[in-house]
Length: 146
Image (cartoon, rainbow, N blue to C red):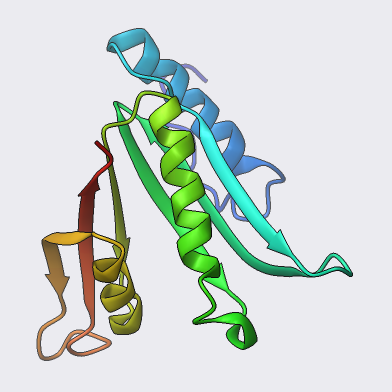
C-alpha cells in the first residue's frame, strides 16, 4: 500500500529507543553542519559498598556542555559532592573544546545552588494562572568555562 502514512505508536516500552533515536539525530546533524565534539560526560561518587551517593550526566555539543542531571543523595548534600562533580565535568568539557556550559532546572533550591557555582539565568518559562502546576518555573542558565 504505497502512499500510506505510518501510524504513530507509543515507543516508551521499546528497549533502547532513546539511545537509538539520539544516534540517528546526531548522525543527521553531523552530516548537515560542522560540530565540535559531541561526547557524553558522566561522573559518579560511590560509597564503599558501591551505592551511588552522587552523579552527574551531560553532553558536549557545538562547544557547549549541557548538564542534563546532577543528583546528590539527601544525606550527603552540602558536603561539596555536587561541586566536585561539576568541577570534574567542566575540566572534561574544556578538554573536549567546550567554552561554556548550560542547563535548565525547575527547583528553586537548585537554581540558587547553580548560581553559587557561577551560572546565571538567560531565560525562564513560567506557568500562569490556570496552567498546572500554577506558577511553576523552569530556569535556563549558563556559565563560561574559559
